[in-house]
Image (cartoon, rainbow, N blue to C red; front, side, top):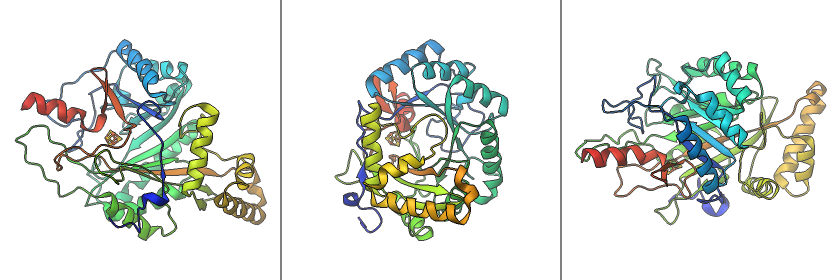
Length: 382
Ligand code: SF4
């Protein structure tokens, strides 16, 4: 493996485990208002059975997951989660348990009135999938920036919500990815997360012919990002369950201010933040509180003594204030790219992420959400 781009000895291995994990994942419906080709849930397939999970069942699942996971974050996924008729009650229940809930959506049903109601119910944020794979009437990824911008402005107008975008990386759009990262960086006042999911094909039937030619490796994507952003640091990772050294999640985080990057966070900074969060709150949540991920001056000052990288942030922040004193009322905020490298059915066995943060409860057992449907359908279809 080429260690010039990804070197586990220089990265922080996220300390998540089965029983101490930032996230719990629920899937509330198999209804969807899109049919994305290659959906890992098989929702684009004719044999998809549509149903909404009952509220009581979901409540029990959320309570049980919290007991198992010690999670602070609850990811609400589907299908299209916003199609669940009791989505507000689900968010409200999670909020009553002190969980920060995020809804994964394709964006079609994202409208001011429903999102405002969800925010009042305690929603922490939205992760909206937008790319040319699920909007194939668009030819180029940056043709979709106008749409990303409209969601960003809508969510910002409601206020107090976090916002992320998901983008599935294929061989066809790999080279366009840095343009979307640039858009994301320029829009740090609106957006917090960019989840780059490497395209994977799942087999739903043992006799199915699968075309794996669009699958991208994590090394290919990281190399592409490094060529567009030479200062970018891949600072933390989740390893692989199959290989001695493997990169299943790779994160890059930075602190932005006035459309400039004050500094990419190095491995030490992530380690200190993660350990501090666990010491203070007893969990590994990567979301500090409700609302956007702003960094206060006190937090910066506190870290300056310990972290060289924070000294750089502080220096650049002060330079910005001296140049433009009216900025003093604004705070820097952090942005994160989360690269997810799911297993592929092209291998002999599935290479799951260490302590999979996106596992669902299936028959009472934690099961990675990415392959659950293909395993279920393959056993039904033979
Ligand atoms: S669901 Fe699959 S891709 Fe997602 S974290 Fe778990 S193993 Fe990794």
